[in-house]
Length: 299
Image (cartoon, rainbow, N blue to C red; front, top):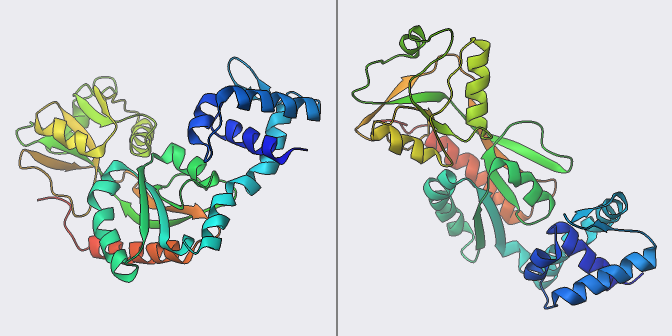
């Protein structure tokens, strides 16, 4: 079996198509050449590896990918280790809020201990964090935790934070109970700004509303937590937010507690084996969180 054909197959399967794979491969090759060599691999194995239009792995293709993926995905890592660079390289994925407000301070502390560290940072949502980790594209994801991590991954809880509502300073109601009294047949009709439905904070909120036989659909959905506060400050309605340590609310905004709502848990997700620099990042993250706990979340 031609190992080069297998390597091309790995990239095409990983990036779900030849066009994207050609852009991501660490070596130059034209799309027609990839297509031709994938066909030769199928002929050699006497199986169909991809269904065409839309492109997707067949059962045989998936079986082959699962077999070769651990080898090819770890090649960049072992190459870096052999070159002595792995100890200085850390790839992190996190939400926009964490990237903008927390990691700069945390990584500045880490850099004092690791002055030659090379960092690769990318915005990652909870849904894609595990896939990037399993594909060995990031070392650690700082993310909202939900269910048990996928096989081969572990998570470490850093912080649990309360859900809260935000209101414009001139809003009529100041408690969640007062808002609920205005519900019509269990339906709250006040304008609501919230994160997208697939975000964990929205799922927790809606599930708890359901337990209380209440419904409250958002009028505005956003993809960043800071945007919730921005729109509430401009009086677009109430906003679903989290008690974010160290981030102060704007003067035009006040908070409305959500008593007995489940917390939002943030932590780190990683593969079973951590490099020394990744382990130091985890240790620094725990120490940083202890500092955050002492900071107020509102004005």
